[in-house]
Length: 234
Ligand code: URA
Image (cartoon, rainbow, N blue to C red; front, side, top):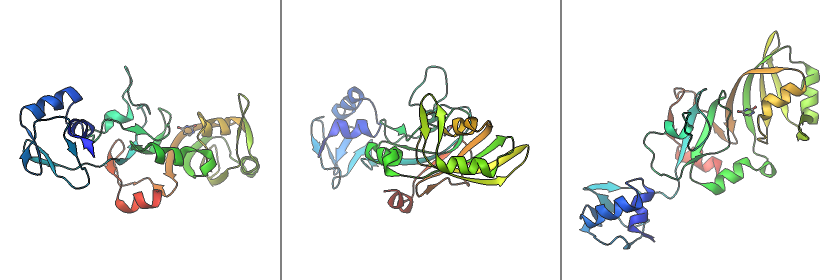
């Protein structure tokens, strides 16, 4: 059971003050009856709440898959830059955040949610959730690099990258690779390649655990996770 004003504010109908006003104005119904008290308790599992005649659906947690484009920052707000949350134009909740950070110039899969427990499970290195990246790397990536990544290597500032799986897709002046890591240290993939004397020039996240980037999404667009995707993830 939650308070009616919280229910409405959680769904981004307005701020807590605004929704209190809407309730007083008689614009909100519970099970078809106008309710004018903001502290009325709603059973969000059973009762039907409507605002201006439109029925609302309350879900405690929401999950969006965003195809993050380059040029936006993985933050909830920023004074100067466009954030990944600015791209979610029909937010169902106001307490959303990105699960892990992708660099401004990195593209690909980003989960946006308000489910902190799930975010923790996906990000904690102790949970060993695979994150798969595709990268273009300046220089010839070699079997020696594969071996060093498999052993784990120092990435500077006293930090170590744990053993990871590097697959060479194409080796040349610009190599193409797929890398699976279970951590998310700051600039981790770029620093791992720097540690073997190479420069990542393009980086894209393909998957996080069971969740794969939906390549039919346009860059910069998003959709809610399907029931199956959510079940696999949880
Ligand atoms: N590793 C990086 O270097 N950058 C990212 O955005 C993600 C992983």
